[in-house]
Image (cartoon, rainbow, N blue to C red; front, top):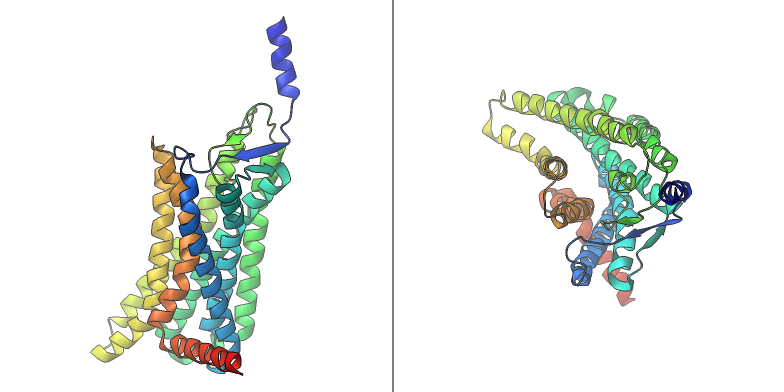
Length: 321
């Protein structure tokens, strides 16, 4: 009788906050990770802000390709800022508590920004496809209104399709455990603490991954297959080299983004017995691409390098005055 009453009381109890425990298995020395993670975060912020300032300052960069790069920089800043301040607060100040609304908001932001990054990569692949395969029609197809329309459609798609994730998570009942063995609010990590059935949460997470990330990845690689097929038909070796060079930086970032995403997904599905590895990879996948994207473009794109030099030299001349 008392056992039944205890179970009933527990089922009626609703936790008021979650506790983010940090990196599982290394809680005693996880604070040593704060310095490299903080440096990665600062690098991501600084490099992407530099890209935005450079594109805004240089008239020669007011082209659709660089507009998409600027949008990608905004998304990268948003993605890194969604998770890194809380992670650094956990590592530095042991601030592990997070309210339920804040946790659900972080779930939404992470999935929205991740899907936005995938969508922007698809737009950039389309831009390169039109530039290389239909060069005469490029200026009439990829215009400023085109960039605005596809960007708004991606924001609308990801914002609406990601909304059910936190809504479904908020509908679950959290009656006993509130410790998340992670340093951010992942959808499945949070809902696994629920006392009721989470089948619909798991199903929607899987469906969302296939609909957004799966379709984007398929279309991106299809675009590049068509680009490579078109480039190989060129008779001049110099023309082939120039065509491939225009999309090489983008291809490097795409391969890194989707390869890392697949690796993280496979590790989660495999249920590896060392939980530290998937958690670390999950965090790094959210902060390394924002730090890596500007550097790859700066190294591979001459116009952007020249723009960086002009902006930085302008900053030095202003500082001297």
